[in-house]
Length: 279
Image (cartoon, rainbow, N blue to C red):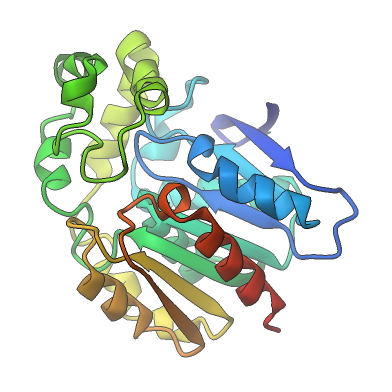
């Protein structure tokens, strides 16, 4: 893993694909209690086809390098962190890809800093007042301090609990190794738990309602790739989000849940390469 230091944070990231790629760079944005491995299969496929991919581990609870709590006070501050990452690596004409909380961060980023973003791919993610959707709004509301995080996340080391509806059960097919790795940092390191608690205290259900009124201003190519078996980020939410963009393609993915990049990686790859070809 490489590292880049921006204001208040050191971000670890993985790079795949040729440095002399003829394609725009692809930056992937994951959600809370997930890391870059959500995107590995998609990025490896893109890299084999000549795309340069950047997969940061953002400080959203599964990171291993603690950061200054100030950069996590609000979702907008975390979106600034993503922007700072892009600037620090001097990336331009970026294909920005988001999922889950990361998709919400992408919406905030293109609202505040659209210049370096050439195109956007959103898979199942937060939007409007679904930030987060049920049941995660209830779970996150109780995870407001390191002690409560340890009390609630600690039992998630048991696979059956980790893959229940209050864990990752609604999001992906069971993957014990991956989800165990995602929960481990906030359980084993109080500093990571404190980062996560700061972030969760700063999330408000209305954080994306205002930005939704301005998403029509982003007239660059957008692809909305939505798993149709998602019980949290429902198909109706995806269609409503897609309707906001003036230059959008909607891709409905039967049988896929929230983590479409794991359930249907080829579909996500195709969406990225297609939207990347649009100029």
